Length: 97
Image (cartoon, rainbow, N blue to C red; front, side, top):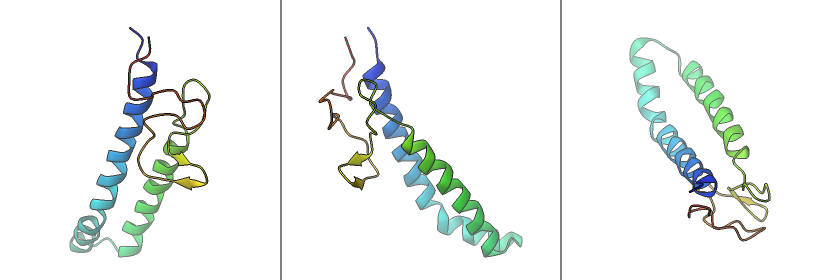
């Protein structure tokens, strides 16, 4: 059985988890950086680079059938992937047959 649809959705969910852990780790990283002597600007710069990397990864996750991004809802970008493609109606959370 092919898993193309499910793989796209699972990658989107994994991307959401990465973003959540990134946000939750900001304050502890700032505190740890301060304790070991890294200036807050340095920690913030690293966090901005990670945010850019994660944003680019989010824009690369698309529907395998039509190519629409999994995180777009019309003009809005949301932090969780679509279960069903809003363009072609493909169910992304179920294995393809």
